[in-house]
Image 1: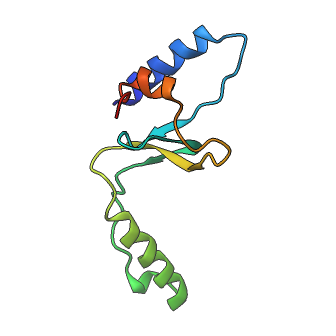
Image 2 (image 1 turned 135 degrees about the vertical axis):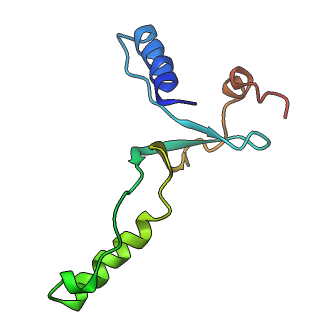
Length: 109
């Protein structure tokens, strides 16, 4: 799904429930459906960073920190990606309700 598609779906839901503010949850694991909270939305972009040079740093510790950050950036995607972070299983009601599973197309599994 692309960001524009997600936004379109969310805008439709917002118009549908304009007087309310329903909670948004994640449905996960179709064969044994659970519902999870959402912790946040994050982006990862291509780094384009150059490898740090030790000679550019006065302190070894600063160079090591910059090197660690650069190494983490090397597994960045080729294109920007938006991630919806799962916040944890909804312990008060961990299983996805049957009605939600049906609407999603996971019913009867």
